[in-house]
Length: 247
Length: 97
Length: 158
Image (tube, rainbow over all chains, first blue to last red; front, side):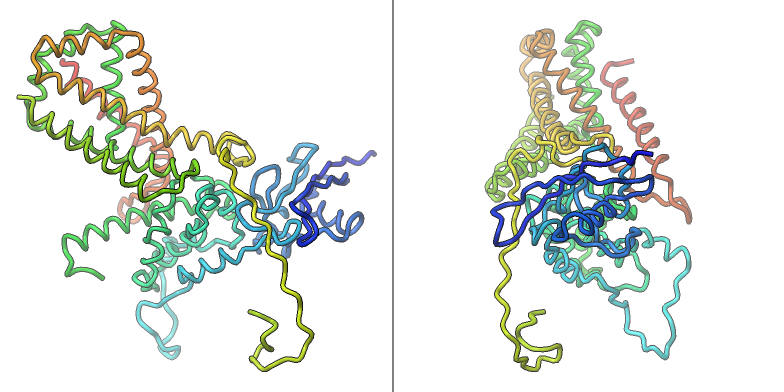
């Protein structure tokens, strides 16, 4: 039984040595269940040990292995070679600086996670002795979808606005801000609003919609952003008309 | 948005233009009568003003996306054009008896 | 985060200093980013996704241009029947017809994409459950049809 092979073109870049990323092509055998990540591991193990890339769980939950596969941001652990053409190009995730080969610098995204305070800011402080925060299933459902984000930054690679305006807070961070806003335990909107509802927050978004299409966890950051635009606008008008009601 | 209803206005103009509707559909006496109605004036004002601002905003974003980084100037030009257009619409609608 | 300024507790560490890392490589944004087809959407739009986005944005400008034309048309009502009728007569010219065809295509494209996007995004609650997105989009089209028919009947006269 002859093995199927794929021609994998990988962008290589050695900092301080190469002037710019250059393609290198490898012929890799594959089977029914081989993913792009498996092919990269094959190259590193059998052909070129210097190939550098990030990966971890290999099952689509850690968000480490995001790369451009034939121009589409994907988790390489989930991209089956049998679903791809015989020639596949793997590039580092778009819109991020390249550290080496397929490894990108996502510090900007991590800074934005801090900037939107992507953690629970309780409505009122509660001592541990007072017990747990209680939530009904309906209350959980209101934010559950947006809590599925694995910080893989595929959405940032898909967003042309982020590519052009890197100061844009971006889909995942804004979706997480929305996640906390919709969480009944949270009371931190007023702390997050200057960034989230500021000029570099939701208002930079032009609703291209690609972020939600590439998200491997179906978070739908585009929906989160548009809903935040709506609620921020209504809040602005309410504060204009009834300033005494400002929260 | 108001853009959804613009299709009707474009279509009527188009149908008159290709002869599927007679020009008496848009006759002076009928349209004057329609536009004289203050509710129609209000509808038309929204029909003009809202898409003007909508387009101004989209154009501002598109110009930036095409690589021109002069957002303050571009924004000012776009929105002031929308304001001028809306004021003109208001003047026209108040001017039609 | 800087390993060279001490250990995890901030105590000085005597270790050979590491050379600074070379700067990361920034890929420039090409001016034809929306045309070049380097980005491939997972949707059926594929490499045309960004181009279709640009067309969607520009469709609002085309619609605005039609509205300028239409504003002049309404304005002519103040100038007497002769002037108005002369303007309406220009609707028959091929250039104007072409302009209207392009404007109509733009308006429809704008409306359809607007509903497709916003229909999915809006949260409409009926009691304790939310309306499924597909019903919202369908409902949107129905609303659009009803409103259009109403305006059409008023404009054309029944």
